[in-house]
Image (cartoon, rainbow, N blue to C red):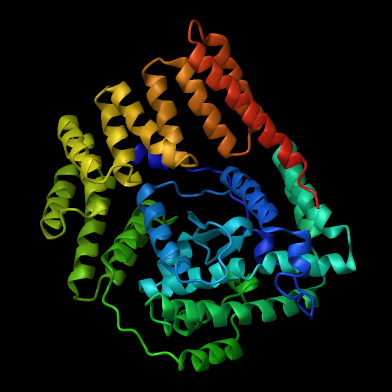
Amino acid sequence: MQRFKKALLSLAVITALPLAAADYQNKLPELGTVASSSLTIEKEIRLGQAYMMQLRSQLPIINDPLIDEYINDVGLSLVAQANDVKTQFRFFVVQNNAINAFAFFGGNVGIHTGLILLTDNESELASVLGHEITHVTQRHLARSIEARARNNPATIAAVLGSIALALAGAGEAGMAGLQTSLALSQQMSINYTRLNEKEADRIGIELLAKSNFDPYSAPIFFSKMASQYRYSTKIPPMLMSHPVTESRIAETRIRVQQYTPVQLSDNINFHLAKARINVRFNQQELSEKLARAEHENKATSDVRQQAQRYTKALLAFEQKQYDEAYTLIKGLRKIDPNNLFYIDTLSDILLAKGKVKDAVSLLKEYNQIMPNNQVIALNYASALLEAKDFDAAANVLELFLQKHQQNVAAWGLKQEIHQQANQPVARYMAKAELSALYGNYKGALKDLYQAHNLLKNDDITQARIEARIKQLRFSRDSLKKLRI
């Protein structure tokens, strides 16, 4: 699965969404009144889908199934305890060493690898996710746009029009228009940030406590971010959109005193996720990765020792020292045989050593135990591809995609399977779905037309393609109509 995880990363990088630092009026509209009259929840969800397509094409979003599953497990455990949840939530990780996190319409929350690497435990990570979840549940973005519209009634139409323009093919022009439409005075920006950050702090800390994370991690992580850049001339994006002042840190320290500290043991998957990000997605030299790994695992706890061995296994794999990597992972699986981080890496090692049958056998067993788990399904399909069992590989992904239609890695792998199997119709169909996820409707429709033209004596597939063409046309035209 290793090569597919890396191949599917987008290469283009843009700065974090300006929407994450949206401005605010001195007086906020009451939630559920002014904001909802213009930006309904349904429209927010559609806008969120539009933004997500835009980001897939412009940000290096990590499509590693282990990282994706881990960050969503943590995020959704917080959402389960949140109030005012009106949309589904989706969490994703961006390969960027800058300290940043952001949220936007439709329950989409992004977090940079640099921020994850800065956290020392899962509660600190949860404190950031809880804060961003609160921005969504309290509809801060919708309320901020509504506040602007009172001064300039054309603001909302400009914002939505820019999104539609970008998705319709205007690219950078659309994003430039979006940024221009959101620009207000610096003072208004400060007022908005203070009011909304205070609300997100309060509700976010409460959410931490309700979700059995340590609420005291919030001020601790605030202090860590502030000290990280206290003497630096370059302010990280997170501190520009979420200013951390001494008074804010003091307020959160006072606020958490109403809660009982939670003493949590080290979470193994947190440390394994950090190790994986450090080795595979950290934009640093190998020597810097090694130094970070040594620093992270100085503690003598069993969990951190396991994470250190996992880091060594990943580094050995990266340097093609497969026997050493195999020995390390084999030892780790004696401690925790069903840990998906270890299973994933073991399957990579087996395939690299040419033991394709062993990899297929391992993953087949786990696919029966946990069908449609994205880590197992994608690795199993990848192993079947290596075994040249194209039909079986495609079948695994088809079952998986029935429930996970927006999984970029799965569609990319399915396209590769049909490419190697010399199945052009199925390849064009998979390629079309991948293009649609990136908002490239023109390319998606072109691929479906190609597939349609190649079909002979297959009325069922022909009807499926025709129906999908209609659906994509409707989605494309709906984006162009995103207006208040």
